[in-house]
Amino acid sequence: MKISTIAAALEETAPLKLQESYDNSGLLIGSYQQEIDKALIALDVTGEVLDEAIREQCQLVIAHHPMIFKGIKKITDNSSTGRLVIKAIENKIAVYAIHTNLDNYSQGVNYKLAEKLGLRNTSILKPGISDLKKLVTFCPVAQLGEVRSAMFAAGAGHIGNYSSCSFSSPGTGSFKALEGANPFVGEQGKLHEESEIRIETIVPAYRLSRVLKAMIAAHPYEEVAYDVYPLDNSDPTTGAGLTGELPSAEEPVAFLEEIKKILGTPFLRHSPLIKRKLKKVAICGGSGSFLIDAAHSAGADIFITGDIRYHEFFEHHGQMTIVDAGHYETEQFTKDLLYEILKQKFPNFALQISGERTNPVSFI
Image (cartoon, rainbow, N blue to C red):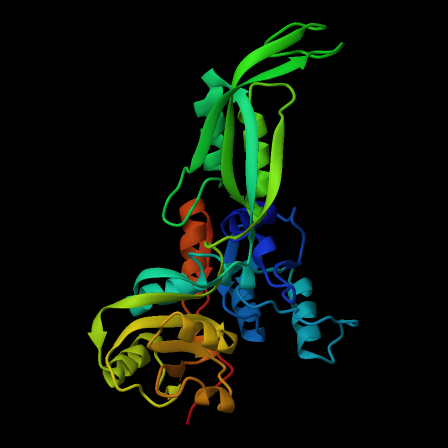
């Protein structure tokens, strides 16, 4: 299988357009045309992970965190990144990263963490990573179902918990086929009027090109007329963090003990516990301190993330408990998520989850 096939499957799930501007997701080392037999899934690319890939004869490492993150001007063995790049290239191991685009996907990193924590009724904490577009096209009445279904299948028409959303209205279209045209209806050189249906639907900006391609392929006309309108609406299905509810309200200490067991960590750093039972939970895998205010505004009783700084623990004192459960700990299930995504698409392809614990933080 070519790396391009694996990359296309990952990017169909979490398009690169969803990554943050500072990020570096995608193929970092290797060729899209490289043929591979086996891939290793890891959270980070370390020397130990590359050793594992060599040992297990994996030609591709799929990691959550990019091994090349900041700009580099030299690739030498004088830096840790340089040594990793050299080692990967010398052993013909390609490296692919799927980072904040998977964070910002509605069923990505945070969805998996919410699943592990048993949260229900989840929704994006800070939506709007992607804009929405209004797509309008016109087709003969008889082809309405075929064209509309193709648009929906490609990703159009999602509003909240509803899919296949559109509006259709009848009208009359006119055109004259010029020399060289091969019209579906009408004749060359003659003005033709056709009863048509106007189809309107919503499309996330990152899905627009795919929807247009599917729409044009399904449309009977040789030249397809369509309009794309920019909207002020933001896409509620993409964004940072997640909120959800516990099945039943829990005492703070009991829930913190439960978090420790689920995440496999001996310690949790947290702000003072609120003096009520917990019901609404906000989460962000990795570094989520930028979402503290959003979690409070969403009415969360507790916010769970990683990399909280000292002064941030003072925020919303007595109103919401802030928990630093660790960067690695809150993202560790991403390996399982990637395995599930790819196994569903390629059930017979050899995939392996890395057994290396790449957490650089230790406890004593």
